[in-house]
Picture 1 (cartoon, rainbow, N blue to C red):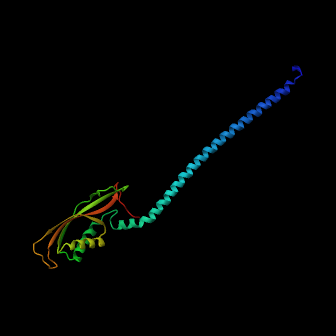
Picture 2 (picture 1 turned 180 degrees about the horizontal axis):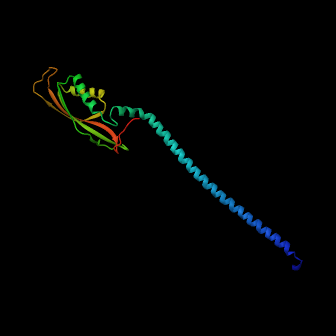
Length: 207
């Protein structure tokens, strides 16, 4: 077949058609790849969003379990004045009542202003701070057992939590007096009434 015998118009049409089909195919391939990348990116975003929501849900669920477990204890501590406002008036009333119940010969007390308290060991209080109010007691006793009875009675009736940080005993006389209202021993003790508050000063209230 000679060159002049070729139908160039037919060849041009088929060549043009082939180029068009090739371009369309390339476009479909590129479009499919781009679509695949977009879908993969969307999948990754949705997966991250799902993971984040799941973690938040699990955290809320765990917080709810903690609240159900510890909230009654928190309410009890709040009512006793360990958390929130301290119940100073109750301390004084309880101290007087306990003294009368165990029939102490004499009792004097003084309470200092509340201050930040360091327990002497590491404790993570988060957003809270630990405070204490120092109560100094001067106790007249028939014998040393009166002190343990006083502390036990206060533990049973006082609205609060305290710890004894110091006690000094002195004999009032060389002669032992067995009368119930007699003073044979004097004790000077220091109590720390503990209280938990928000570190930013926000008052803790129950709704």
